[in-house]
Image 1 (cartoon, rainbow over the protein chains, first blue to last red):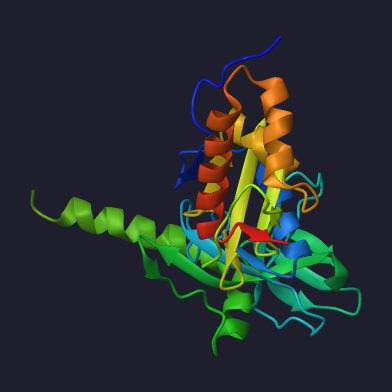
Image 2 (cartoon, rainbow over the protein chains, first blue to last red):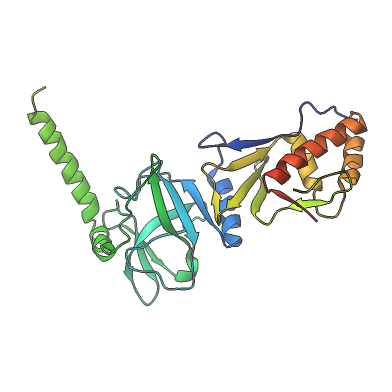
Length: 172
Length: 99
């Protein structure tokens, strides 16, 4: 039984969310790109890295090198169930590996992750086409300390509360 | 710029990642060392997938047209035109290279 082709052979470019891939599919593609020694760029989902990375920001991840990672660096690794990519910050370095935590977590870390478990390091974050500061420069040790203590999350909540109070005081 | 004809033998470029996942054939070009999954994610329709699977760097396009002519109810010449048009576009995009 033969079928007549219903349309010409076609390739389509999908930008943004046009092609909805499952977490598993996206992770498979990311792993395939890393296996070629290349980095990748993708849209972040979730709020665990607020204020530095927000839901919808576009992140560039470079392959990890054999060089030890630095305190305050933002790295990528597979989640415990291996179904998605986690992008969090190194908040301490130990003999066993790196203590990793999301900036929006209050003292709740991902535990110790060994260097061999790391897949990549975040080199760039974009929001609405503009590059965002990721706190990986000279202030990274301080940012890591703030993140580890949960102070970034507390600070953010305090600032939000202050903003709400100011709004209420302002005449309408 | 190379000229493609039915004697050409093509293979996917080293500068892409192609995977069949969840029924879709996805191609990610690796431009400047980066696989851009936000703005440069490509997929193929069913007819294109059948052609892509045959591009193994061993068979000529002519041999691929023969295989397709056995599968599709269409003129061989028409299929040859479809194949040349499709691989021409992918070659221009740097997704296929001639062996």
